[in-house]
Length: 180
Image (tube, rainbow, N blue to C red; front, side, top):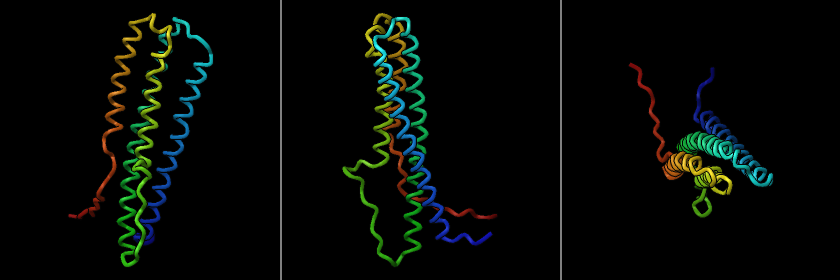
């Protein structure tokens, strides 16, 4: 096994950044696309019968919860990517300390990957939660609608807490283990 050089660690760090970004972009393409296609298909089928009210509410809550689960997982992915970026910056400083390297540019209008993902996932979750409220036949079943509103409120609260909580890693903390 060869020596672990800063250049090797830097290359691996950059590869890990690319991997986390690739996962994020795949999910960002699939989640809203599938959700939008499902919602459009649902509305193009015509009016919904009252007997399908429970199915619609179940589908709405299920899809919102799955999207919330992916959102929470993606927030961890963003956190990992942020940590990797800070590590890469620290390695760059140590590897090319004498060279003048340009700073990474700020995101346009301060809306970067993290903010865009929070918006996309939050909007998708809200769209799923609103589905039963736009189906007129569901208003005939006030108990089901009340149940939906109760669960939807809980999901919405977790979504808002997830979207507004800061997740970026600001300072790398590198500690080497000490042997006793």
